[in-house]
Image (cartoon, rainbow, N blue to C red):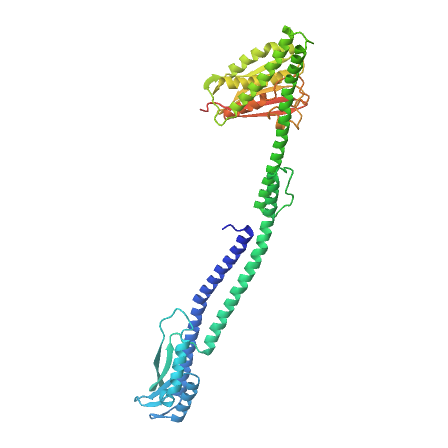
Length: 464
């Protein structure tokens, strides 16, 4: 059975109140009533001592008793529900409540039996007559037997107190239940309302309304963390949606240009406007090569971003690899009037040589494209006990700050015009990031208009 959070919170308060009231009742009856039992027994002892003292005062001496006073005292105690029997030192009965009024005594005994269960958790009660000696000047002059129904007999006042006490506990219990239900409803509403807002926002986000945000702040830490997480998720989805739309446009733009060129050239040759000579066929071939290269880059990216990219790892000197690749670019740098500088010592690394070469080539190509004439490109390799750090820095125009978070996205280029002079498919950095991630490393970028751009690749040295 599925219940709402509000219902569960309300029920939890009610259940907690029931348990607390039950424990209070149990502990109260266990401890308070035990003390009350002692109080009742002490009162009975005091009452019995009073009876003994009153009867002992009726002794006149020389085995003589004030019989009328003894009978009067016995009758008064009988009226108050106390059965006594008085004997002199010789065992002669001076006064016996049962002989005086046996019917009334039986009623009193039955009443005692009915009230004897007023205190729970005691031994079985039964009627007994407890003898007490009567003394006059330290001389025993007689015996009084006081009837009792012990050990748990309660008189009317005692029983009324117990009943009132239990009624108070019942009243407190009912009040606690009602109060817990009201408090549970208020607290559940207070706690569930912000969660309901989160649910509503999450539903809107799931329907594609990524601009939805939860602006109300709660004074509960966990709810604030939940709303913050949902807001961050919405922001991330909104950015991803924008990137997806941009990616669609970028792919269309990248394919449209070569396809449009091919279409126009082919139509012109089919219509006889242009002659299908080697130069025009070469132009068409170049556009086909561009499309093939773009498709090939996408295939590489798919392979590198797979769940388990295949890496052909081996031990090699990354410094030597970088030097060799720099030599391959040397003529291009010279033709553009750029200087390139290498700094680093021999460092071995366990990685896929070809794929790391692809990363270095992509970064050198970017530096070559975006560094102005007369600029300087530095390639630095350094290491620590666990990692190798490869940095390629140029003093070009830099990357705008708003573009830095997206520089590794597919087809994303800070050059919004996609000038053919810079060329490229726009996924070279995406491929580089995927290769580095497959090796368990990381790649980052720092850039500013004043200092240029620096790409930093961190790779584990000897990770198997």
